[in-house]
Image 1 (cartoon, rainbow, N blue to C red):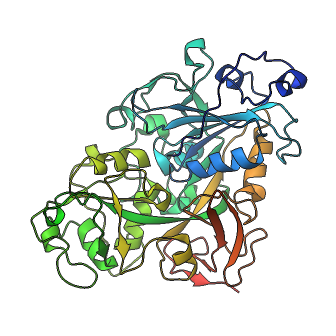
Image 2: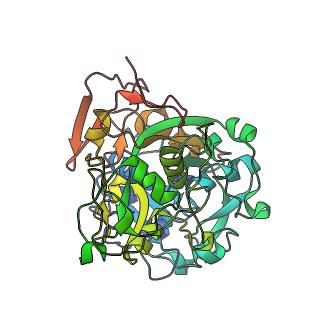
Length: 446
């Protein structure tokens, strides 16, 4: 996950707008961002793949030029996966969210648990753990959150700089109705997270946001007797067989053009997200037709579910440390782990441009779910985010995995349309859509 540059904190009085604006070239301090001090807040939970896009949108269009303070709490003290975050800044003039110019605004984003927490707690009305900056000891850029996902992820047993709060905005990588068995979060405590059936998930107030492009990542250490960084090209059917557990060694796996991926024996280790993850659900739908194809019902091979990761950073770190490992994540993670190679599918390297041309179709449409918003200014931030900021091609987060959905908001598909380029990233309006159903084959809109 992207951690934005944390500006040097300076001692500021938490006073009126004039005092805040007087603090030149400085973003808010963690103390200013604490609950009760920020003028406007929103509690967001869900997709870890979409999390960097929210950070980009906030930094570009809600916070002023003093910048964004990213307060990141690793799920394991000392690690860097940053599953609990707070994005904080001074509101820029004319921000569109109804926040007064110069006022402190804070968006808490919990990626821990992924898409599970972007839907289930809203249906059940359960409050879950978020970062808490109220205690003085937690008013640092890396506050301590204690626990391991494998141990407390399904019970929400995090301790340290956390507090319980309702999910005011949920984010899922796909529409909520796909999170049914075998992609239902059955391991999660019903006492803590509640339950939800398909009808209840369908009744959520959902808004399409943007498309996200996904890819397979492989640790090639040991393949061909070599090390990491080897190019790898697989067919969609081959990946299906790997994820279904039909292959155990890379020497038996064919490349997309024939021959073996590895000339030497190299064990395959599948590194999965937990059931309920949007990234995992998308992979199972795309490669195995899970709950989509009535002719067969396949699901991801997961012999050791207790080892599953609860956030994108978790599975990437595990795969990077495991020779021969294969996992899946959004393409903006390419290069974040030096030991992982992003695989091509049938000769096509995953990219936004390849997706808009129809050459690469492993992408899904993220959605937002509206919860019970009680935080001051929260409704304004929510309406700003879903009312165009995250969807319109002109303001969509300039992240390497994001495509604008055709005919959504102001998005008019043509050849495709190219928007402005920010930070070397170009956003396209994809001429193809799944029309709100992840089981649909991508169709062109006119």
